[in-house]
Length: 396
Image 1 (cartoon, rainbow, N blue to C red):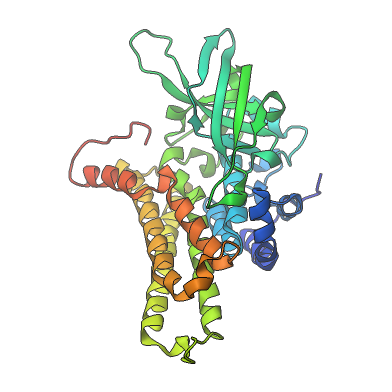
Image 2 (image 1 turned 180 degrees about the horizontal axis):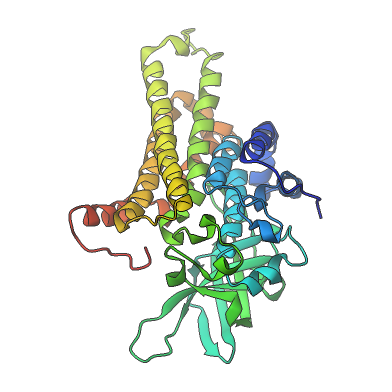
């Protein structure tokens, strides 16, 4: 267990992240082939305090401002998007767990403040039964990023209602990974090193205190507020969850554009023309840089608003909640446009599987496939509310 000092600032965390970028660039191909973040990288993330940035201070965490995980994703993903994704996503689970009942938090961090938590929001038809004192769960879940480096997992489950006629209610169920089986299924063309494998539970009992209803995380005091009264653990979970992901797409796109700029400074065509002097190349690069910068600015504006309002005790309106998701979806759209705009400049080198620009292009597109960043989904909810229509997401 690393002896992490507990007074690390946001500035210092981000400085440590910047220092790791060259290392992640060097390991990116190795990580991609292994289909998971290397053990050494995981340990260095722990030593730097990355996984504990949103973990409650009372339980050994740093409890930094919301959005620190987003900035962490931006920086690290410029070197390796898979590594940045794992760091940001694992870190965000400290925020999520801080909203659970105190006894659940004590189970995870009481004896080991360094314990990290994975998650899965996608269950393949699991069986969930109410029993005395909790839930009995059997089933399979997918897309659990970084799970091989974690010791607990928060699973999305649909719990049948106690009252006949009511709809099933979504809950998080917190389970120790030594009661689960991890299935090596992650074979992808993008985010290949995230190790987002499947998890299988076979008739596992989860006590009530290790569950929390999604509806209890829609803003304001949560079960965890009993011991974690800060604003961080009262932010509406669903409305702001995409901030845990969007940093990685901004970082991947930023890193790819910069790599291509560096390549253009030294590359010439077969005919001897300097590509850097071609106006078409310059226009593509200028537009791509502007798109990535706009994506970051959009995210940063909303992140700053969430922090300011949270500290003032103000909850976002329904329109604001939808806007946060819409804007992160649009930031993602801008990043995809940016990488698609400059990718053709690479020519034949750009289709080599081990090429770093190729990897960043694939990773950017892979991140854009996440449902929390999918433009068609997040745009429709925000637009409906904007014109006075209904809210199609009751959990928002």
